[in-house]
Amino acid sequence: MPPRKAAAKKSALAFDRDRALLAALDQIRELEGQIAQTILATQEKVQQLELLTQVSTLLNSTLDPAEVHEKSLEATCGLVKCETASMLLVDPKTGELYWESALGEAGKKLKGGVRLPINDRSIAGYVAMTGESLLIHDVSADPRHNRKAGAASGFQTRTMICVPLRVKEKTIGVLQAINKLSSLADRPPAPGASGPRWATFGGDDLAMVQSLAHQVAVAIDNSRLYTGLKRSFYDTVEALAESIEKKDSYTGGHTKRVVYYSMCIAKYLDLSADQLERIRLGALLHDVGKIGIEDKILKKPSPLDDSEWEEMKKHPEIGFSIMGRVESLQDVMAGMRYHHERWDGKGYPLGLRGEEIPLIARVIAVADAYDAMVSTRPYRKGLDAQFAHDELCRHADTQFDPKIIDAFRKAFKNEKMGKGSGGSRYGHGSSDELYGLLEEAAATPRRKTASDAT
Image 1 (cartoon, rainbow, N blue to C red):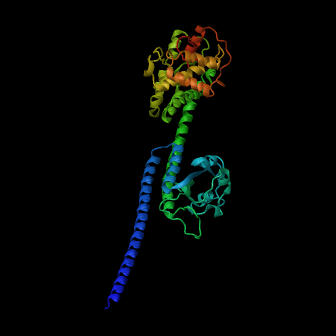
Image 2: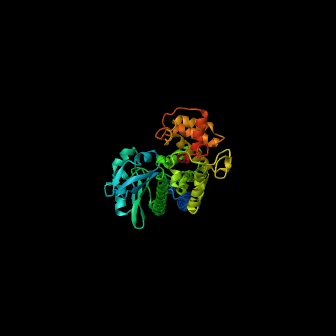
Image 3: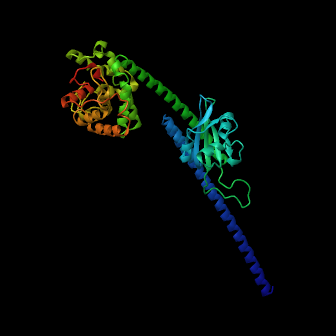
């Protein structure tokens, strides 16, 4: 073969080999891209499953309705990578859907505003009516889209997953994932392609939200049962407290005011929700022991003699012995038993001093004293609220915990504690007289009057 032809053939073979190599490299790159996409999708799926497991644990760890709702929406956004989420619940009284929770500023505007009937005139209403889950790629084009809600919030809804919240074969609401966010796994639409030009939810997203919705529905149902039991318990406790007050017409409303003042003070003590609840219950029950005090002593408008006063001082221990049998109240017994103790150790029933006195009792002691001072009694008008405030502050570190008095100062300044408390304009009088009134407020034997043993 002539050298020129041999060289040409060799060049052609080399070209074919290079072309095959380039084609193989292109295939490898394509495979690498596909593998990367598969790895990313798998990682996202694993993250979703891990998050779903974590959410299940979180939802089972609380019975607080607000916390259940918030965690549910946060989980929805985390599971399917969406801009926001919302929850609409069925109002059993009206049969309408109302926005219970929604994330973001738009959600705040929606909550408590727009209500939707359960029918096919809204996406949420349709889902609640039929029990059918919906995956919508272009909400604005859906004939069921209720534009009233969007107009109310100024929020543009593009894509949506809407699933029913069902428990015991009953729909209690709907859960919505709104506006899918783009991820690395998303590919932009090809030029000229039809359909929405934004990220959209897929079937896997729908399956995830449906799985979450089942857990959320159970958690909501459990929290409602707990809330109902808790409300019944509080109603019973309040009824018990009011029945005690009926024995003395001059202290009517005292318990509710002490509860209110106690919660105002506690607001400035950086306490947990559980501690606040214990203070509220303790304040409700602080005088329940008076049920064991004879009416002739409890209602006596004139000063008590020594023996009568000793009987009156037994009411914290009587309340403790009565309510101490209730297992669920063990954490609040201290408020009932020790709210007449003093910071300097001169109180009763045990003469506890300083931080030996439980915090709940120290808070109730200040609230109890304040209400006693500003409330009108058969033998005197109530003190001016500001003056009662000043007297309480003057006895910090002797009768009252200085830290509680500091919180009381803040509450008095920022909360509604000066009006409607029973106080009225009252002459300042002598220092001894006012100190006597303060002693009455804490039910110490300085002035032995039944109406002041509050």
